[in-house]
Amino acid sequence: MRAVVTIAILVGAGLLGTGSAGAASGPPRKPLAAYGYHLYGEYCLSCHGANAAGRMNQTSTSSGSGPGREQKQQNGIGPSLQGVGALAADFYLRTGYMPLRHIGMQPRREPVFLSNHQIRALVAYIASFGGPPIPKPQPQTGDVSKGLELFTEHCAGCHQVVAQGGVVTGALPPALVNATPRQVAEAVRIGPYVMPKFSQRDLTDRQLDSIVRYVEFTKNPSRPGGWGLGYLGPVPEGLVTWFIAIPALIVLCLLLGRRLRS
Image 1: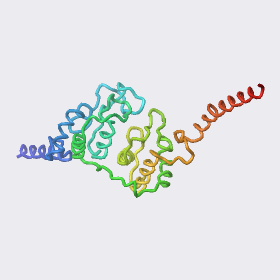
Image 2 (image 1 turned 90 degrees about the vertical axis):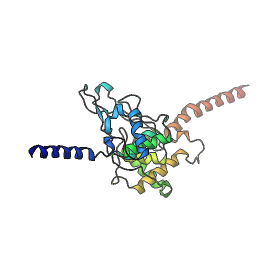
Image 3 (image 1 turned 60 degrees about the horizontal axis):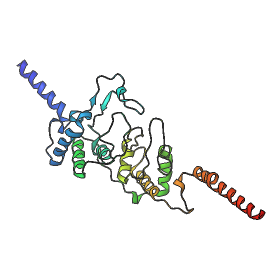
Image 4 (image 1 turned 30 degrees about the horizontal axis):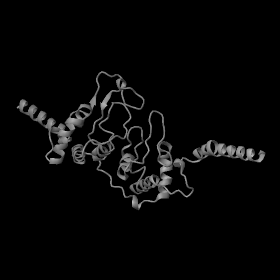
């Protein structure tokens, strides 16, 4: 009787251990996610481990994979993907951030070599472990001026006020000229690399729509003054004054002086 009870407990524990993972015990039943399961084994398994549970480097002594750390100093090879949902998977795959070329380096926008169908399959497989869905921003309902205000408050410190990218300690915030509205919304909710994560409490979906609309505006802003000079403010305007306008005036004065002498 005791043996039967022990077996029942072990079986129950095994069921509880695998039930939360859903698709973790093998290929999912849905065809798209099942195809993603095989793609995961080909492209993602070596870093993120079986069942998307993450993989640790046992030879390392320090933890984390923050900016500026070398690969040999990194404890986690690939984080767990359980619970990140379709949200994170779609962002990292469609921007080319993943697969990562070198472990521990900042993810950068790269050409996407996976087809749209393959990406959808991988996203479906990762989503089978639970997590938030892909956002559906509606920038047409947002307000540009409100988006400018919110972007200046939350984003301009790293990405620059017209979303041209910048420099922070240990990372290079990218320009957003190639980011789609959905990718902007995903990044805000995910907080990739050193970027902070903004929850619904920090920024509502309505506020996010205004930010996305403003980012779209920065890609082709109006130019009432003519040459935009990168829309970086007074710095390039001052450089134009000192290195173009003043030398041109000096040359003009010299030419006029020669004519008057003759």
